[in-house]
Image (cartoon, rainbow, N blue to C red; front, side):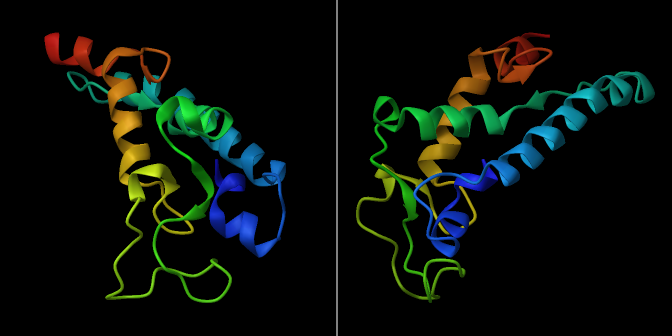
Length: 138
């Protein structure tokens, strides 16, 4: 959810996500999900799995407490300026980094990526046409 990243929220000093950026991400996801069957047929014997990271991040933003996340607005690392720039080198990230949805103003935290991977293992709505467990059994 690009429109919910700390970079967007802090640069526009908004309390809500920017729907314009989120719509662009939804369009990109749709294009990518339409592409994988074409790749599958073009590269015979290969297996492609589309991962809907947008859906997972949207779920985290909508219900952060159900994932143990308490901060979806600020990044974990120390940033220069108003939180719209990369992390300051050689300065340790926050002590409670597992509670943040974002590591820096642009990227999901380790916790967010762990949630994505965990859901991709079993949910075909996140990773399709098959989830990772089905893929490993194939």
